[in-house]
Amino acid sequence: MGPGFDVNSIALQTPHLEMQVALRPSGSRIITMTGTFGRDATTDPDINAAGKALDNFLSFFRKPAGYHVKIKAEIPPRKGLGLSGAESVGAILCANRLLNLRLPPKKIVEFAAVAEPSHHMDNVSASALGGFNICYTHPLNRQVNFITIFPPTDLGVAIIVPDIEKKSTEDTRHLVPLTVVKEKYVASMSYIATVSAAFARNDVNAIIETLPWDFVVESARADGGAYGKGVTAEFLREEKQILSQRYHVAETISGAGPSRALWFSRHEDAKAKRRNHLGLIAPAVEVVSERFESLGHKVEKVYITRPSGKGAAIESADQKW
Image (cartoon, rainbow, N blue to C red; front, side):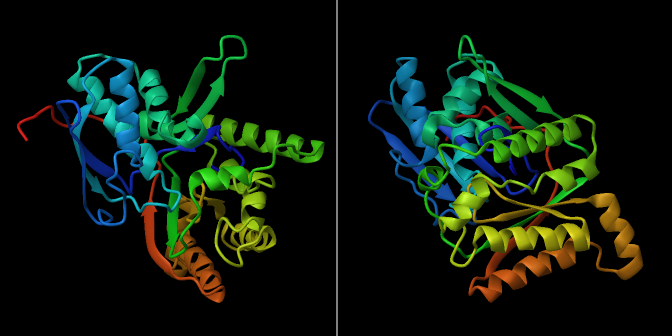
């Protein structure tokens, strides 16, 4: 999320997924996908995040490694919107209930992260805990901890999903530089600190002013081709400037991309609509869509949504199926 690579994440109200988990005898590992994107996501338990998370979880607690998982997939796969994180969190949350382990949310996040490349915990923390999250590791005991902040109610976001097929999240992580010059390090720390403080203070203006400016991870991934043909760091920087100066909209890459997240004040958007009937976010989305088209890409889907203060939750414990 912006400059907060592997540190900051946020839950969204949409898109989301629903899933059911039932434990089965050892050797029976079935994943069934339905929903809008059911045909686009893998059902291989060795690849699907829910399967990988459950295999590790059941092995850790020495339980029979059998299960049937049904996933109604309404999150586009391979678009940087956290499908794998949602799958793994949902699977662990359900297994925790079925085995009556009563693990705290922190442990749910840790077990879910096993299914993620490098076991990064930012996206699984958002799926599990909801809200805006800051992930950090204790310098002495190496325990992972989280600070979760309820997001400002005035903060809106438009998610723009292009037809670009991204590299795997693991591949895009290899594009991140191992060393950073001092000036970029200092700038990144100032942006992360400001964004975190802004969420804590419900300061939407400060979020919008600071969130887009990541000159390390997004820039490296853009120039490495992670966000699609023609989407260079310079192209992205120019787009961010247009959206910020013209519409007071902050643009970030969603997760590992290639989807865009356009952050805006819902109050400002409503006020602008009373003046010109278009508001701020609609023309901002149009700008990004046109720029995608200029590079030969198309926009597949646009979600107008808001951050969610709620994470994953159990709706029913019925196992009759």
